[in-house]
Length: 135
Image (cartoon, rainbow, N blue to C red):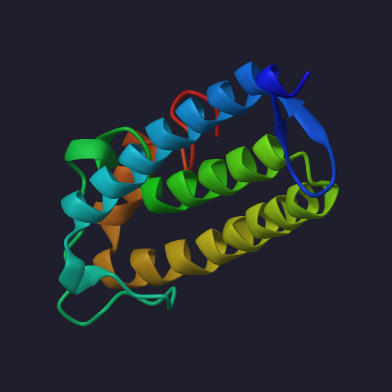
C-alpha cells in the first residue's frame, strides 16, 4: 500500500508517523529560531567562548531554558532521523547530543567567568539546560 506509506532508502514508514515527527521537528525549529532571535545575530558563534560584545540573555526563551538553540538543533536532528527510520542518523543524533552536552559544560564555564554572579544566579533561576521541565 504505497498510498499510506513513505519510502525512504532504508525502510517504509507509515505516513502518520512521518507527519507526527515532522510536526514535532517544526515546533522545535521555531523554538530554535526564537533562541536565535532572542540572543541576537551578533552574539552567535560556533565557539563556546562568548564574543567580547556579548550580553547575558535571561528573558524571552532564555527564561525557560539556558541553551534553546542547541535544543532546537537536537530535536530537529532526532526528528529527521526518526522520520527517515535511519539507525545511522539516530546514532549521529545521539553523538550530537553528547557533543552538545560536553560543549555546554565548557560554554557555561566561560559564561560564569565572563558574567560572574549574574550567570550563577541565572543558572540557579533557570535550572534547565536544554529542555524545559526535563533537562
